[in-house]
Length: 133
Image 1 (cartoon, rainbow, N blue to C red):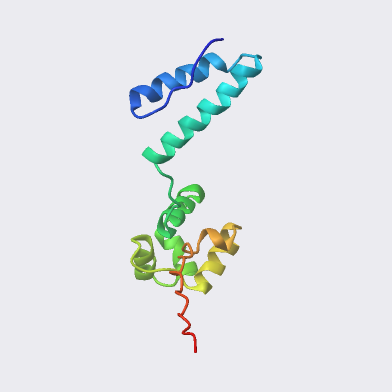
Image 2: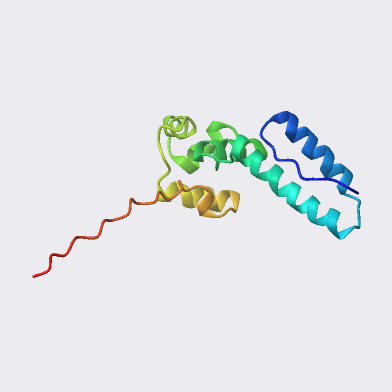
C-alpha cells in the first residue's frame, strides 16, 4: 500500500491519520508495518499533547474504590476516622495519614503507592563557587 505519514496538528489531521492506520493495519508489507508503527507514534504524541494524562488525586482514587465496592461515606468512617474527616478527604481538603493509608491498603488489597501523593522533585541545588586561594 502506498501511503505517507501524516503530521498531526489538528483534529482533522488526527482523523486522517487514524484512517491511514486502519488501511495499514492488515498489511503484511514490511514498509507498511513500519509506516503503521511510525503513524501510531505520531498519533500517540499528538493525543498526549492535546489530552495529557494525569494521575488521579487521592480523593478520586477513594471515590473510585467506593464506587467499585458499593461503599458509602459512612462505610469509610472506620478506615478514615470521623464523618467530617471522610468529607474533608473526599473534597481534597485533607490528605491521608500513614495509618489511613495502611487501613485502606489492607481493606482494598492495593499498593500503598496508589494512595500516596506523588513525590515532588526538589529544585536542584546550586553548587557553591569555589574561590581559588
